[in-house]
Image (cartoon, rainbow, N blue to C red; front, side):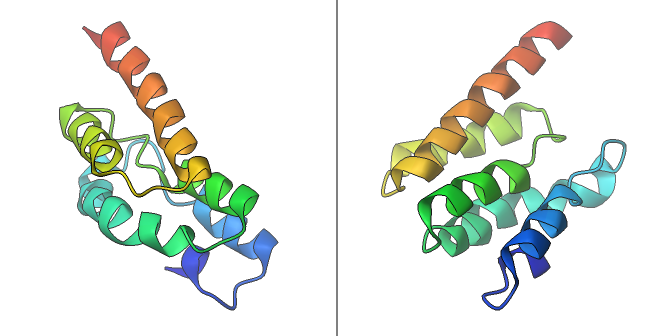
Length: 105
């Protein structure tokens, strides 16, 4: 994934990350939800704190607003071992996702 490449300049990494989660493409993007939690979070954890938090927010599967994303987020938070920027990014995204699901029901 270009957003996570070690040699990627900061601005390019952020630009790539902004373009991943396109609304209306959920059927294509669903398999990437698991990759976010298993690969992207560990990959950004070694980055400088503000960049790690920004990438964690941008790469979060926000367009997949469903119980599976909520459960994966809760599991990642429960496992622990996250840096403060990553934990904060997940907590923020979890709150937004919770609101989205509440509005839908």
